[in-house]
Amino acid sequence: MKLHKESKGTLTIVLIFTVVAGFFSIHYLKIWSLSVIIPLLVVLGLVLWFFRVPNRQIGDYLHDIIAPVDGKVVMIKEIEEQEVLKERCIQISIFMSPLNVHMCRYPVTGKVVYKKYHPGKYLVAWHEKSSTENERTTVAVDTANNARVVFRQIAGYVARRIVFYCNEGDEAKAGYEFGFIKFGSRMDVFLPMDTEILCKIGDKTKGGIDVIAKLKD
Image (cartoon, rainbow, N blue to C red; front, side, top):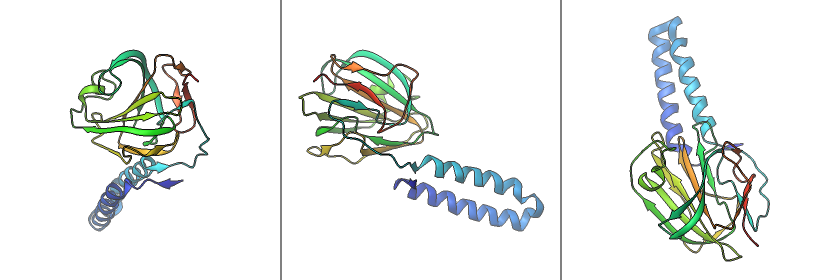
């Protein structure tokens, strides 16, 4: 397991603060310094845990929709997607807690045909309007069987930084990284109406591994 590249700034700040605070607590608090050092080490451990990138064997997926993140399925419903598809589709939403792996992966294989960053609010990630009102990114991929799949990173009340590395024209490969969300949030995936849904609300997903749906051949 390694640390994600997005950890550099946060980890540097936490390490410096831990070392400085630990030094002064040992110098001034003496025997009571452990009451400061132990909580600092816990915070450092949580930061390291948050930015972990587990080793996963990613398979070849053509028609499968792969879970884009680790988390919990909190919504499956039919909606009208207005930004890209402009038609009825099926939305699957996966909520990530601060303890989940936060690397974001392509849910499908194909070609990136759309990407856009939207500034916005910071409603709690499970709020229904967070998909259209919060800070977010939108990406669309056209698959080999002419399906267009849209997916969206959504910032939440705690998550204040979302990044995505893909560009229009890039080749997307299901299970491979396209972005990162810091400190808990949500991923929405918008699928054609004839998609076979294989997950249910409450399911725990493992990004890049679990198949949550299957496109029509």
